[in-house]
Length: 250
Image 1 (cartoon, rainbow, N blue to C red):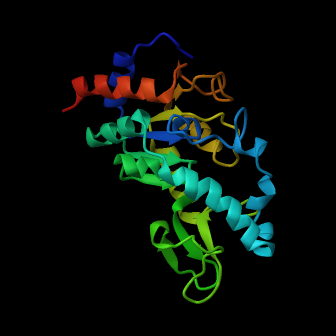
Image 2 (image 1 turned 180 degrees about the vertical axis):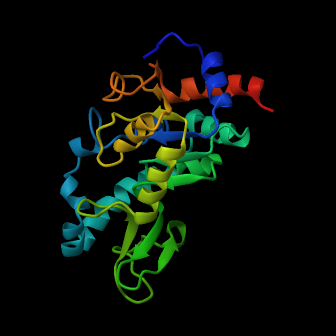
C-alpha cells in the first residue's frame, strides 16, 4: 500500500486504465448532509432498524412509512450532490470512469451527471407496487397521505432493498461482471463491512485490478487489498483528482 502518491500521479493512473470504475458508500454522501447508517451520527443510533425489515413494513405499513417519509423524502430528498459526485461525473465525461457501483440509495450520482450507475441497494427515486409490480418515479407520488398506494390499491414500497430482501438480480450480476472486467477501482467512502457488496472490490483485486481507496479513516480494505490509500474526504480528493485528470484527457 502506498500513501505518498500525489493527485497528479493518481490521475495519471486512472487515465491509463482501460476500464476504471468507482465503488462508493455512505461516506461520499455525508458531505451532502446525508448521515451514514452506522457509526457516529448514524441513523441506527436514532432509529430502530426494524422499521426497514420487510416483514415489519408489511405488518405496519403506516408506521414504517411515517419514518421512511421523515428520513428519505423529507430530508434526503432535499440533498444536493457535492464535489465528489461532480468529480466522478467529470471523470466519466473525460472517458476515465466507465461505471459507478454504489451502495447508496440517494440518487446523487445521477443528479451530478453520472450516467452509468449501478444502484446495488436500489433507490429512493422510484417506488414499486409489490402486488402488480408497477413502478412510479418518486416525485410523482404524493406523500400527503401515507402509506401511498398504487392505482391497483396496494401499498407502494420505496424501490430500495429492506432487511430480509435480496440484492436486485440485475444489479448483482452487472456488479460481478464489472468487478471481473475492471483494471482499476476507486473505492470511496465505505468501511468495507456491508455484505455482500463489500466483496466487489475484493473480487476486482483478485482479478488483477488496482485499488485506490479514498477514506478519511482506514477501512477493512486498507491493509488487505488497497494499493493506494488517500486519507482524505471524498469531496477534496476527488475534486483534485478530476482537476489533474484534465491534463491527461484526450
